[in-house]
Length: 328
Image 1 (cartoon, rainbow, N blue to C red):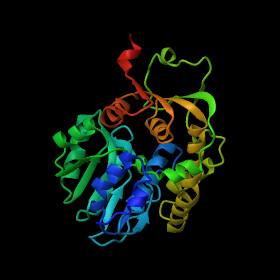
Image 2 (spheres, rainbow, N blue to C red):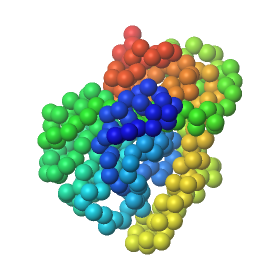
Image 3 (cartoon, one colour):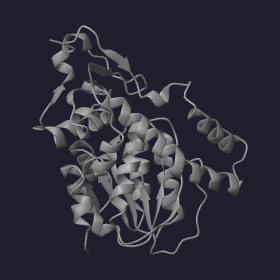
Image 4 (tube, one colour):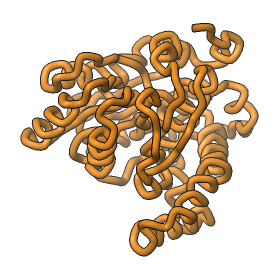
C-alpha cells in the first residue's frame, strides 16, 4: 500500500513506526468508536494522532461516536471497526471495555482493531470473562501499548493477532504542534495527577526548583466554557438516549469544535514551560513532542513505567523516577 511519506515524515519516529505496522491493516472503509468526549486532553491527543494516521489509509470514515452518542450503525461486513486507544482497557475505567464488548457482539464478522491500549485488571474473573468474549470474535486485532500489556494479552486472551505499538498520540503532525505552541517562559510545571490513577511519591526531593507551578489539564477546571459540552452529554445520556438528532449534533460538535479546542488548550499549556515534571502519561508524551526537558513519574499501577521501559528509554531530555527511588 502506497503511503504519503511526506506526511508520515512530519510525525515523531514512534508515530512513523505505527504507520509502518498498522496502515496495511486499515485497508477498507471504517467506523471509529469510543471517542473521548470528555475533559482529559491526553485522550484527545490520542484521538488527534489517530485522525492524522487515518489520513494515510485508503478507506473513508463512515461513522464516529463516543460511548454516549453511539447508535448501532448499519454497515457491511467488510467495514472495519476501530476503537480508540488509551489506558482504559480492563476494569479501572470499566465503561470503555464494556462498550468494546457490546460492539464486538453486535458485529461478530467485521474486522475489529483495538488501537494501542494499556491493559490492566484487578479482578481475575472480569479478565477471564473479557478474554472469553474477545476470543469468540472471528477477526479482532488488539494493539498493546507496552510489553506488560502485550504479555498479559498473549497469555490470557485467545486472540491470534496481538501487536505491540506505541501510543497513537505520536502520530500527531508536527506542523499542528508548532502552529499552536507558545513561547516558553523560564519556569517549570509539576503536572500532578489527582484521579484514581494517582501515585504516592516523595515528589519534592526530585523537584529542583524553589518555585514550580502545580496543575492538572486546564480543561479539568470547572470554570472552563467547554464544560458546557459535558452538560449536553449528560442530558443525552440520562434524558435523550434514543434521540438520533441530538447524538448526531453532538458528534459534529465534538469533532469540529470541541476536539480542536482542547488540543489547542493542551499544547499552549505545556509549551509555555521549559521543563515539565509529569505524573500523567500524556503530559509526558506531549512534553516529548514539544521537545521539553521532562522528569517522568509512575501512576498507581505501573502504566507509565511500563510505557517508558518499552518506548522512551534513551530519548534525550527524558528522565524517569521509579517509585522505589523515592523511598530511598
